[in-house]
Length: 162
Image (cartoon, rainbow, N blue to C red; front, side):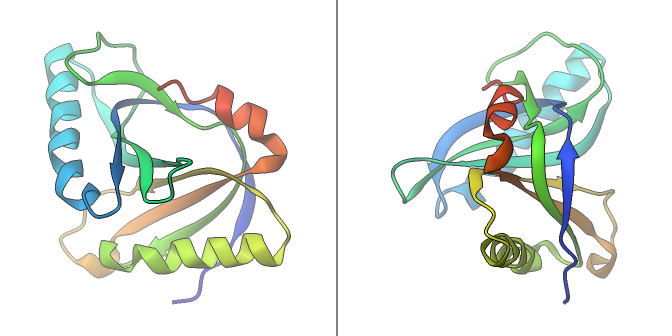
C-alpha cells in the first residue's frame, strides 16, 4: 500500500482513556480490557463516545512505552476506576491514513517514520491512532496515524494530561 503523508496542526482533542506503561510484547493482550473499561465508564456517565484512539509515548527505557487507550469525547464526565479525561496531543503532526486490516498498521507507521527521517523532521516521541467506524469487511477499515513533530514539542506536551 502507498501512503500519502501530510503535515497538520492538531488541536488537543479530549479523550476518556486508561493510561499505563507497558512493553510492546504485553500491549496486545492488555488494550482490549482497558477499552472495555472506558466504554463502561462512559455508559455509566451517560456520555456518548466518538472514535477509538490509542496514544503511544516513548519512554527512556527502550523496551517500554507509555500508552493510553480510549475514546474521543465531547462532554465532561466523572472519572471512574482507571478511566481519566485526557487529550490527544496538540501541535504539528505528520499524518497518514491506513486502509485495510489492523494487522497492516505497522506499514503506515514505518511510512510516516521514513517520511519524517527523509524530511529531517524530529519526532516528539508521541504517536497516535484514530480508528474510523467499524466495518465487518477488514478491507474497508480506516485508521489515521499521527506522529508528533518536535518543532511544536511544547504544544504537544501541553495537550496531553496523563
